[in-house]
Image (tube, rainbow over all chains, first blue to last red):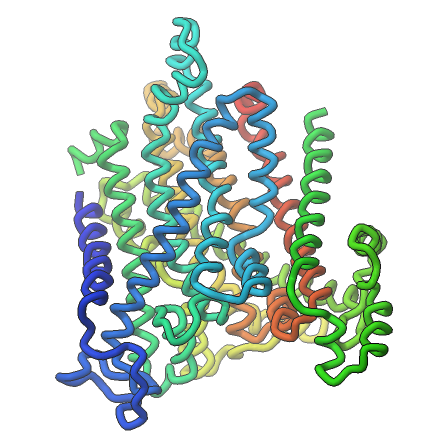
Length: 271
Length: 313
């Protein structure tokens, strides 16, 4: 319950910041002003300015948009494609499942960062190439998880009973497999969202993700790396934002898991 | 028999992956000869260079040449420097393997005990603290951890180098010192992620009937967990660890950048930067092949640990 609340609050704050940024930010986040460079926090600039004189709060707010955008598209692609494929691979006709599985292994050989580097080299690095690369690369982890857990469900007695009662494969997948693996998939969604946020940060750090002047938390880190000793604030602010975003989605997923997974009900009641 | 089948599938996947990598690089815009020679090259010189690179031939012939070369250990020559790629690739791969190996050791040593503890004591304060820490750790990007570790141990305390690489046979002590910070920044973040999975897997196992049975026949909870639980918890954890090895291999790309380590990752990024496409193609293929080998090993181990899966498939 506590996880759910903290996670929901953190995610809610990020969503709120992103939504407000569409209507209002304290300053133009891309406004360069040499006279204002490297200012500490003040009444006008709550978190100060960066080496180009850009307002940090404004950059954070618009950066939240980038973060959510990447996460939603990447995880959406991965979960909607990966989960049915995984269940299919476990429960469907053997030869088709085999093909799904092989394709899955093939995609798995191209991790997000590698795909993003290839996409970036081919189509030019952008937020779009980054999130598609992250999404495609995350499909196998959903498919693998869905398959592994579906196999475990399929080897249980109640599925055997359902089978002997004449229930068909698809019906078993929908009535027994999906509800039983839903909790794990939701946890995977939250973890994947966090991983997507981290991946976007890493790609932007390498210059392979969101391009200037669009604000991104990862690039804010990269731009301030050599100023760590003199202006740690510039590194701490985006670093904390990334960590809180990832933490928020992780806790939210954990909270939802406790909520949805009936096997954990006793634990929740007692703790 | 099952092993032979897995090996066959592995080879087939590897072959398809090589076609994908080749096709992807073949459709890239830009002419390698033009990149190598600059904008002032004459058409004759360009044609000559294309011929020397072998890129004036039909694509299927280029593909078979490339794969044939890879299989015989001939990785071709850089379009930019003209140096043989193979020897450099081997050196770089060794560096990356040291980094990934050390990071994996860090991750497993930290995650397995902590995750088990967090699960066994999930109703107590110690379990909650471990869970909280692992969640916080998993939320920090490896490169950020690297930057902060450098600031603390290299810049402020001056007890470890901030970057660079010393080969183990040149100076073992300098090698180990140089490996500590990169391995920690790569490994600790993975440890945090892995802890979550270990905890989750052990928690699932703890609720199984066979553990209650084991306790009912007189085993202490810890004994029951070690003897009957961990083996079952190992199945999902191993899948994640296998997937993580691949993540670590690629994550090393970023950490190598932070610590200026001459591994595969920096080789790849440098080649992308200078548009040395043949090097990009070779490095991507090596990384893809490495990931496939890891996945094959996980898959084989998987059926060894959980005999139920052998029957299910």
